[in-house]
Structures are given as C-alpha cells and as structure tokens.
Length: 445
Image 1 (spheres, rainbow, N blue to C red):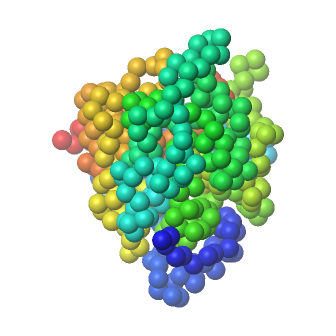
Image 2: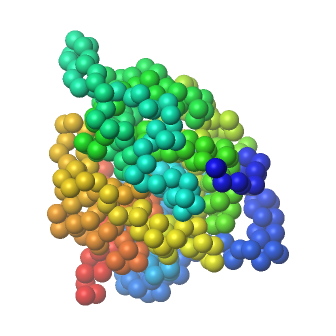
C-alpha cells in the first residue's frame, strides 16, 4: 500500500516576505533550527585552510569571471561544517546589469538527480521498494520492453526480448539500458527525440512515451546516462500518492529550509533568476541564450516536474542539501535519511568492469562508478584524482557542479549558467578549484 502523506499546495519559490513568515513559524513551533546557514563564510582558518589558499581560490574564480569565461559565478567551500568561502562575482544578467549574488536562482539541471535519489531512498526506508525489484513491478507499462540487438545506417533495426527485467538498482545507477535523447545517433536516442520524451507535459505522458522505446542494451550490460531519474520521479509519485514536487516540498525542502528550490520560478522572483550565456566566436563575447520555444517556460507552474533535470535552486539551498548528506542524512536536528541510506547512495553499485562512459566514442572512466544518482570515485589513483576515496559528485547542463569528499568532511559548490560554447582557451574552473584546495590539504600532511 502507498504511504499516506499530507497534501500541500504546489510549492512556489518563496518571496522574501514569505520566507520570513516561514522562518518565524518554524521558530515558533520549535520544529526547526535556524535555517539561514550558510549566510556568510566562517573564514579560511575556521574551516582548516590557510588564509592565502582561500585568497588564491577566490582570486582564481574571480579571474574566470573577469576573463568572460562565464557571466557570473557563486562558489562555496565548506569543511567540518564550517564555510571557508562563500562568494559571488559578475552578473546574473549582463544586459540588465543584475549582479550575481548569493541569492541568485540557477537552473541546476542534472543536479536535480541527487535530490530525486534522496526521495527514492526515503521511500525505500519505508519498505515501499527494494533494490533488486524489477522496475516493471512499479511500472507495468515496462513489462514488455524489448532491446535493440542490431541496427545499421540504412535504418534497419533488429529487436529482441530482454534476458531479464531491469532492476531498481540498475535504474538508480544508469545501467538499466534506457536511452535519453540528449546525444547518440542510434534508434533508441533518435526515438527519444522524435517522441519528444523530455518535452512531455507530465510524468504520466513521459512514462507512456518511454514504454514505446526499446532499451539500448540488455539490463546491466552497460552504463548509459539515461532518462532513469525522470522515471524515478514518476515512481515517487506513484508510491507516495503525491505529485512529485509536493512530495519534495513537504519531505525535503521544508525540513531543510530549502525555501528557494522548486520546478518553476514565481513572478516575484524573476529578478533573481540568472540568464544563461554562451561564447559567440564571431562576436567574441558572451551572448544570452534564448529560452527553448518547445518547452514550457520556467515561469510556468505547470511545467514538467523532471526528476532528471527540472529544478531551480540557490547556492544556499543546495549547500544545506549537501551538508545533510555530509552529516549522514541529518541537518539541524532534521533527520531526512538514515546513515545507512546515505552510505548506499554514495557507494558504487555497478558490476565489476562496468565504466562510466560519455558515449560510444569515449573510453570509460577508470576508478569511478555510480551509486544512487551521482558518480563515485572509488579508486582515486586509478581515476587520477586528488580527491579522497569515496568522493561523490555531479553537475548540471548549464555548468553548475558539486562534489562531496567524505575523507576530508568537505564539499564544494560552483554555480554558473553557461551552455552552448566556451571562450577559446577558457579556464578549466573545476580542476583549478580542486588543485588549489587539495594542494593546501597535501601541504598540511
């Protein structure tokens, strides 16, 4: 039987006044601690870093903005529960001269996925599904899926039966065999684009469309970045009896004080919403991207609640989410998940020898695997990474990125809005941040 939850109204991004009322109500009821953290940085030394290291880190991020690699950025580094730096630079909108601030709202795209994974694990803790269950147990429409056995450039396709049904574990680690439509010139990904799966009006329609597309591989045979997390959002709806966004609002955002995270932007918050930019080689400058005409606007409350990439959030909200994971599922007295569930999420669950791949033309990434909706560095030496064993991470299509290093009790968030082309010679901001941070840690040993 589905769990019973209290229905809430659709969760908009709160205005300043609503957020203040929300905070006062929580304090009055005593049900929450102060959720303003992180508001400012505690400082380098409080977080166990040399002052000159954080100064170099801030200067490096500021230079990336000054060089027009991105229009603006917000970045945050926390260790042992203390914030080493929390800064912003540049513009949320160049044309409107709106500065990038700590309160800026970002399209986090695939950084939605770990949030969906946490929702799934909440329901797992209630015994509503098991890792080795077939996905078709919860989505009967998938019971008759087939797999592509072969295809050629002439469009000939050979389909065959599945050797077995994909499991929930495989759905969580992208080895179930589903396509996505974001890339790939094959019958499966072509069908995702032709059926406009990611432009589905709702999750029911998305499932209906996916059920008409064969798998790209037999379940468990390959790691394929896929629509799996949108499917998970549908499963959350079905098992909880709540619309996906309402479930997240009640059981995750509100306990954690994530008042600026939702699937759309309210009219009151439009001025906080960053524009997306790309580098135009002909004009040699950053140009603002137009919103896609084939998708509902971010200002449309009825847009698809995509568990794979639909959320808007702030650095503050996502920092609270990551610190909850860092703490083993709890923050400020609010228990979201058990420590065991967090451990499951950040443990590689791919079979031996299965590697993360960016596509058929790219070799796999040694030393890295996948847990529940994010990648895991289980062998830093093989992965050629300076980060600690068990570091888990993910990023979004507009350039936002994060990582959590449990060895050093540390996490990083970088928030930008960049999609469609970079300046020639642009800095590798992700690696620059890692190099500066971990060179300091290595010098401390």
